Image 1: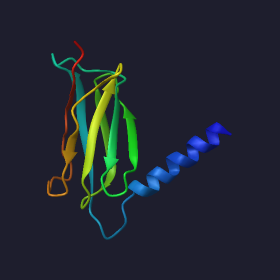
Image 2: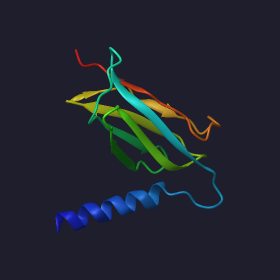
Image 3: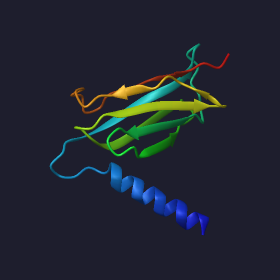
Length: 111
């Protein structure tokens, strides 16, 4: 039952973040590091749609990299990352940033 609920929630989130044909889409990528510049594998990156307040999450790969695609070009998003109960500062991906493939790196204090 819980697995079905999680799948349904994930599908509903994807619908909220999917692009409709009249909007240009973009992809955001980045790296999560500690303050020394070491990549943080397994950090949870949260992307929040400012309009709908829906949140998507991505767990970083072995190089600390993450990516989200299919984002509306006319909506602001915020990004933040969590690693071992510590959070990065929140960063905004602005609709006024015209780049189709912006990069937003996140730093988590680990000391």
